[in-house]
Image 1: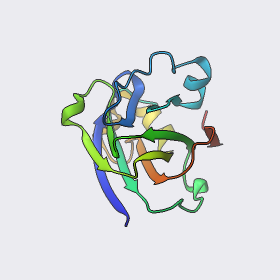
Image 2: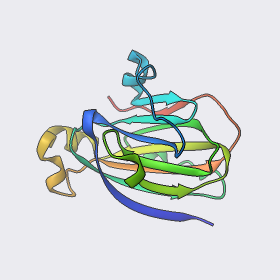
Image 3: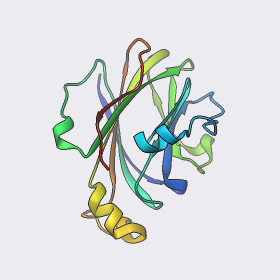
Length: 160
């Protein structure tokens, strides 16, 4: 069964987080120079998704029964990584949000694959702190999640 949820999250420090509900969410060592360039910090049970703005972003979370087809041509930047969700509960939040109040999603317990597809990046970057005042300039992030064996992070499409 596929579930889709729309969120608005504050991308404080130019990032949002996706993690196992039982994770401490510590990504401090994961934000390497490469992670900043890739807009993706990876820890076994947490991911940091880099944003181009430090304001609210539009986030769509889709939990899927299987890997989706590739539609990366419709997005500016697309990355994937594996995430160990041992609790079976995935949390999506701004990096300074209070985790117990964050949106939580039921997913397969164990390894999941997370595909992050981002769009409207040039308009959002140009509007900067005013980007969240209009849907035309708001950064859009789609997070797709499905059960899959652990595999290395990949950059399918890079925006610079």
